[in-house]
Image 1 (cartoon, helix red, strand yellow):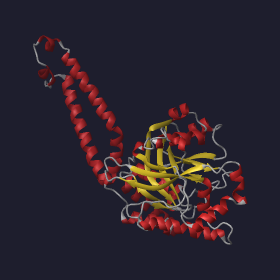
Image 2 (cartoon, rainbow, N blue to C red; image 1 turned 60 degrees about the horizontal axis):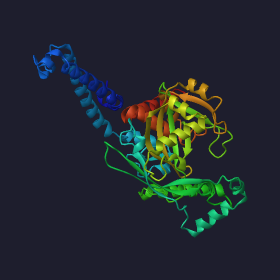
Image 3 (tube, rainbow, N blue to C red; image 1 turned 30 degrees about the vertical axis):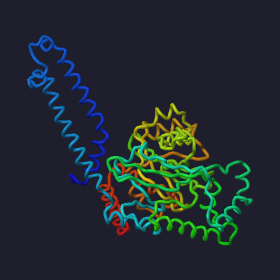
Image 4 (cartoon, helix red, strand yellow; image 1 turned 45 degrees about the vertical axis):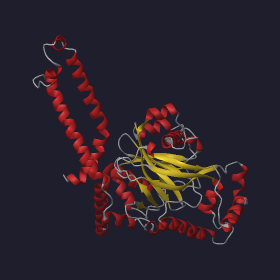
Length: 439
């Protein structure tokens, strides 16, 4: 066994047990102490408490010593493995593989970042195998004044779009809803307690649609011009080195759902959802931020990610809050990364949460309540199958939602760490190459 390769996985397992180990030790320690304090010899003064607690011939004391030694070894391993895991990042071969299976525009200033397909990370949890607690992602500033383009050209073009016949139906039905764009992000340098701070501003669905799809509305060859526009603002963001978003976007939750078997829940996007790659496979659901996701709207530093996740799951699958609490392990919710969706210039928070059910059990539960206009089918994918899907890009890009590739990579890293992931991808690549040569 390669100890260094498995150190990240060891840390992940130990980290999950750390609370239970300490809790059981404290319970046993207190029970031994209370038992000896109440013994007749101690109460009568025939023997002191310290004589009792230091006598290794007493079975409870001997067991306590063994448990204490075990706990010390456990926490020493936790510290060592955590120190090692926190220093891991993609090696050169891993980075080259990511670049080979992603859009070239995502590559600049990639050091320490992750990329696959048309998405890349802007911030990644310092220790990917444990992620970041949802309460440590906070909104530090919110501007209620709606976003307005400074450029007269963009301001005029946006006005033409929102007043166009194409957008009239959306506006008439009241669907030009408020959206919350990320304007800036920052993080601290404390790996022991990482914090991601976000700044938000109010915008509208219409302005987001203008940026994503209709920058050159009314002009000839608008699709090609739109691609050029998207590439230019993505490149502007990546190359500037500034953690600032200068264009309307709708901060989105990309929730990766893990089944109780350790598999990834895959949903098929409904064919009715024409504006979001219909019939492709997503990992697992996405939901835009709403003001209701803040538990206390006066204080935007509240744990909004937890509320956001609950609402997203309940709405997408038609669950009640009671069902959600029963079926999902809320304590397993972790934030893995802040991503840039380069196909439309948008930002998303990649998170993962664990089901207490298998995929089949969950499908039976939500079969009649699922939002059919959003999801047409539910499947699952074993982690062992993830490398093949990732290496299949771009040949399989019509099968998966653009964001699915990076989500799969993040989940695989969360479960296996950088070293194992890199080795698995290189092995899968080698096997794929051998099959081609045999053919």
